[in-house]
Length: 381
Ligand code: APR
Ligand code: ZN
Image (cartoon, rainbow, N blue to C red; front, top):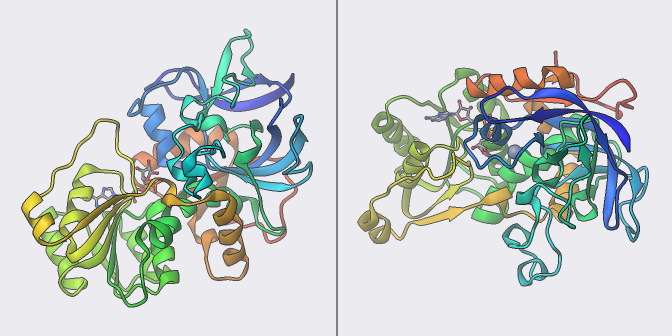
């Protein structure tokens, strides 16, 4: 049992706190990872606020990257010393959907139980009580033991902060554009919500050649960043009817693809209304459990409008993580622009609060000392 400092949520509504825990060695099919960086995503805030079912005392974080420290029996890859990004939707690799290259549809993943594949956890608190790892990874911690198929090797030279964001917001946003939607060059696109996920949708739409590319948010600074990243128009969200009118005007009568990345029913409804005949609304953001949206059925049918749910961008992490890393290294995907601030683990609760008010994009916890900062590590003041 090794010692590990980790951000633990004891109950929804109560601020999570950094605790000293014990972590067991990896068992068969598992790897131990020394976490080097972890983003703080709105999904962590949903858990902390009780928007989603509370699993019990849990280490938060699911947007992390680090170095493999040890491997359990039977693990051929990754190997000790490999830099890896940690997938929060680890596939069973055996079901029909996994076999068909649709791991995002794997119904047998144990990720939503926040346990390892054998149904147990590797974390214990000071009194010996079990602590879960969020989505089986729990990356707001100095170490994590994860299923080997969740630890995806990355090419060398990717800054840890960038590698961490590839894990969730970048794969979710870029994947929604490239896999769930299949945006073609010259097609009009709108993105509602410009957090880490929404700005990744913008970057993906730029890669795909979308035009025009309209960005919508309430926060001026995020609109400005979206324009810098390649959006061709920015709409400051206010009254829904007015926002919709401005989006329709900016997209030349409606978008071919409208992406929802705020995680709100009202922006999901706007996205569905913002598409043109034959267009597609791609729902990427996750609201609180049970929240519902409504849409005009007749208009949807008459307009042959599609509504697509895109969890994790309908991506294949084993393929997409390295691909996104290579695009970053080639200067084609400016992921580092999403890193608002590098912080220590003790500041993670503050980063969660900042998400609540829509301030900032991604604050990334970087674990030091001993964090060999990858060459070119991003440091934004
Ligand atoms: N119209 C447009 N944008 C809005 C609106 C609105 N009515 N309300 C909020 N937003 C913006 C916020 O200003 C913020 O910039 O939506 C953005 C949400 O970004 P984050 O809170 O940083 O969330 P992020 O981490 O990007 O995740 C977005 O995806 O993975 C899910 O659970 C996650 O639901 C969340 C969503
Ligand atoms: Zn996330």
